[in-house]
Amino acid sequence: MKLHFYWRLTFLTTNCSTNTKLFLVLFSSLFLFACQVTDQFSIDKSIEKQRVDYAQYYLYIKGLTSNELVDEINQQKLNKLDNQAKADIHLLLLHSLPNSPIHNPYTAKALLNAQQKKNNHSSYVPADIAFVALLKDQLNQQLFLFQQLIGEDLAQEQAKTKQHHALSELEEKIKQLEKQILQLKNIEKNISEHGQ
Image (cartoon, rainbow, N blue to C red):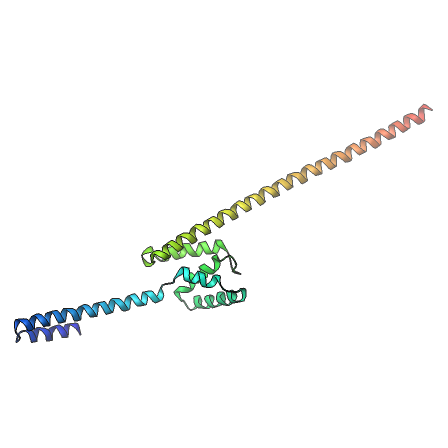
């Protein structure tokens, strides 16, 4: 269509005055610019439809009750099966939500890493970049704390095992000493019986 319009414009300008030609050139430039802007606007609009507002969705799920969270999780799992792009991000945020039935920082971190590999930062708006960085920091902090707790639990288990082992050794020594005391009493009794 653009080529056809340009050809008609060229044909018309050969038979017109200079002012008319100038007007037609300006009008055609404006028309072509409007077409390009409209095309760009429709592309931007489709990108906007695909974009997820991380903070807005997180606030939405933060306000849900337990039953509503279960419904939302099931809906997002269905959306993922339908290959909806937003479902991955929604599930990531559902895994990172502390009161979610599927809260799991390990899974959330893995999903976040996969999401960052899939999308470059140019597809994020600055607020999303900040939210993703904050989420990543919080997940890393949670994972670090979990590792510390696991380490402390392991150290406590080892200490309990050592204490149990030491207690068993002491109980064995007590039994041996009680045996020796009993033997000494028997010896003393025998000596007193022979001495009379």
